[in-house]
Picture (tube, rainbow, N blue to C red):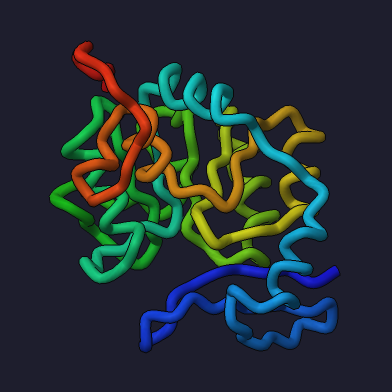
Length: 199
């Protein structure tokens, strides 16, 4: 089965990269009928919005696998947001870095000082099964695979081993949406409340 991931190209247009069963890839406009058809062929459905909110509220610690010290990378942006806008203990996992955002970078999940509640993954789709094996080995309970990354077989495998799996969703966007913070970026959250938002 083909896998599809979405990204924005240099011109600002959204493109879908299709990975075929034989390993070849091609980029097509995300708005094209073919891209929509391929996305519609997804059969795995992850946790609902209410369940994702519960996951984020229960968690005390998050490890970012594939974290980058490069400020241009999305993992760096997400790490910055989690450090500044949440109460989570945030850990960065990258065997090729020594420090990210002023904190030590760890070579793997097994090297962390605690078992994280959520493992947020910034790795390509084909790497997800091995990351799930690493998550299982350390005893973490939730794998959160970043927006644009989809591996349905890996999601089914993770769930079969008792993991909670969230896939193709940005943890920063989800956290901000649930806590009324997306308006800071120009998004209408639909949240109207006089109450102080929980972090």
